[in-house]
Image (cartoon, rainbow, N blue to C red; front, side, top):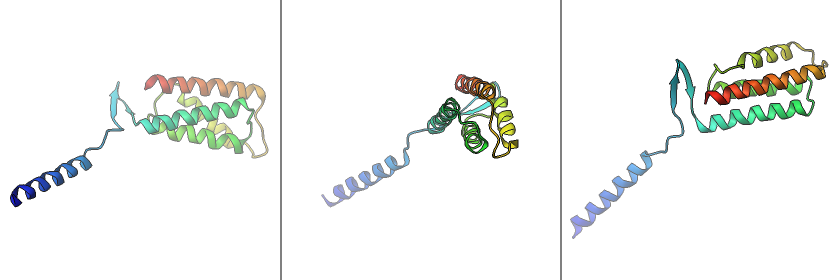
Length: 131
């Protein structure tokens, strides 16, 4: 009886250890046309959120360096965790460089904001389509 009980406890302990070792996969990497795309669900959600936040800020007429630069940097950082090679990403980089060169007191023109919104939306579509 005692040996059977010890055996059962040992089996239960082994089962607990196995359950702790098994973790659901939240990340995978896919190589499509030599483009390494990280499919981490959390990173995708964060990148999508960053794109939406930037587009909303532009629609709300955020037009200064101190408001747009952190949002552009956030989009590029978070989308970069997934892929650095999606359609129209270079437009985001170009805008970030332009905004970075602005004086803190400078503002973008309304026509520039429309162009930025178009480019950000195009980059978001390129990012999304690559997933």
